[in-house]
Image 1 (cartoon, rainbow, N blue to C red):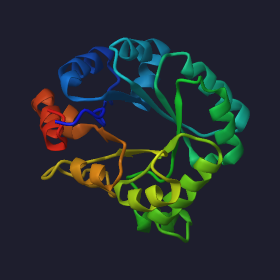
Image 2 (cartoon, one colour):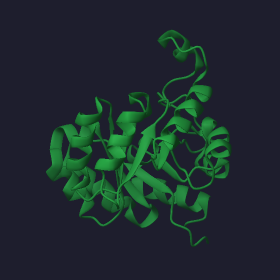
Image 3 (spheres, rainbow, N blue to C red):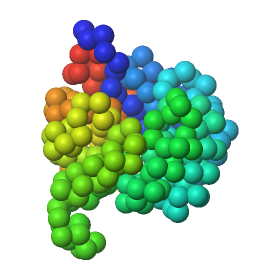
Length: 231
């Protein structure tokens, strides 16, 4: 059994605080952190985030900020005060915006850039108007985030090898949408199993519905922990 930190963060994607806290309590023995996103934050605001932070696990605040540098800096400053460990912004907001976010964050808060959403594939990129495929664009944005001084990126599992090679071992990679073998991919397109994503270089794995929508979320989280050698 490994002594490195458990890389699995469970996504508490619900608008209800009681449901989120119950899920967190059930999976807590088998995970390394928790993620709260737009649905939860929109419904519950700072008090809801503080309630999750109070559980004592690292919290990834998945709000995907994307605005002018001054606005993003103000938001990051306010959100950093909530005690979260990670906040993300969109890399496509540009270098100045990302630098403003990094400067506004507290020293104990990682600022991570979203590259290309894992619900998008090459066909979607073409429709949007990008000439390069999803993985090439993710790599371009990861390099930009590193230049801007950010701590890492959110990317698809299939983007990991190129990003790790270009940005080095100390650049944090967060991979959402991992799907255990046999799970429905649902709206995720660029996915791997947790073990495959970890082997490809993921530092943090975000698991949502395969755990939270399971009949027994604790058992589902434990199965992933066993697969990765953390239980």
